[in-house]
Structures are given as C-alpha cells and as structure tokens.
Image (cartoon, rainbow, N blue to C red):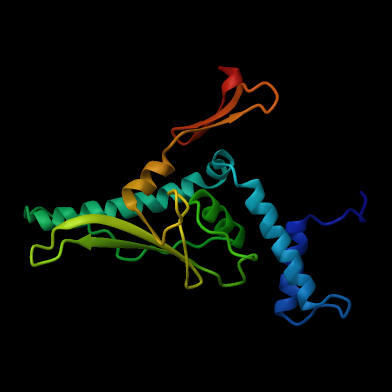
Length: 206
C-alpha cells in the first residue's frame, strides 16, 4: 500500500485543528495556514451539500427529528391549554443532540441557514429556539410558532424565504423539510433522482 497518498481535505483540516488546539503545530505551519485550510474545507462541504436533494440525503433524518420534536412540544402545550383533565406525557423544554462538527455543516445546509466563514471550532453548538407568538392583551391567543437558529450565539438567518430572515415559521420549516426535489441531467434534461417521503429515488429504475 502506498503510504505517500495525499490526505483528504477534511482529514487534513481535522489533524491541523487538533495540533493547533494543543500548540503542537510544526514551525512551518502557521495559524493562518490552518484557518485557510478550514475555510476551504467548509467551502467544499457547503458546495457539495448546496443542492437540497444532496443535503436531505445526508441530513434529513436528523433535521426531521428536530422539527418533529418542536411540533410535538407545540401539540403538548395545546393539549395543556385545552384543560381536558387527561394525563399527557410532557415534552421536554430542552432537547440536546450530540454530533460531530461535520454534522453541524450538514444541518446548516439542509435547514438552509447562512453559512459561517470557517469550519465550526471545537465545542461549537447550533441552537434552535422555538418561540411562541401571542396576541397582545390578556387572551394569550397563540398566533404562530417561530424557529430561530444560532451558531455559537450568532443568529443565522434562514434562506427558506425570498429574503433572509432571523426567524422562520415552524409550519414553513416543516413544509420545506418534507418538500420534494428533483435532480435533472444537464445534457438531456431528463429526471435522474427524486427526493420524496424521506427517501432518494432513482427515477430511471422506475
């Protein structure tokens, strides 16, 4: 086996970041070199997952789980407000998911959020806040539920809509997560793949 094969960009970035965090970089490699490698790797990931079919193929299950948990929380609160007297399992106020840094990039793509300039550093976290909008006054009538995303405390605007916004309606987010997408051949224009019902379908085989 050839031991002189070049490292993949993602592996190179991981090694350099690890060495840099422990002050073990060789003198020929600077902090700026590490930052440039991380920026390039982030760009490659965002380019590869820029198409919604590819993004959903990679991260749909995780993103769908997050959206379902938020929808279940809304349903739980609605049942409590109805005061039927029935016992219901209370949904948690906080859900924590543990994942790799590459998972964060995948989530940003499938959720169509603004891209950070560089690869998420160690200990990075993506926060999704479920916000309930109520009508002014004493009625506390619920108008809508919104979702706001932030990476390491910095709000990431959503690009689901025509103009980037700080928050996206939960109903819109759910609709987009379950929407269908197609990939067409650049030369013939024929449909090659379809994303439908949480699965990637090769249309030529149908």
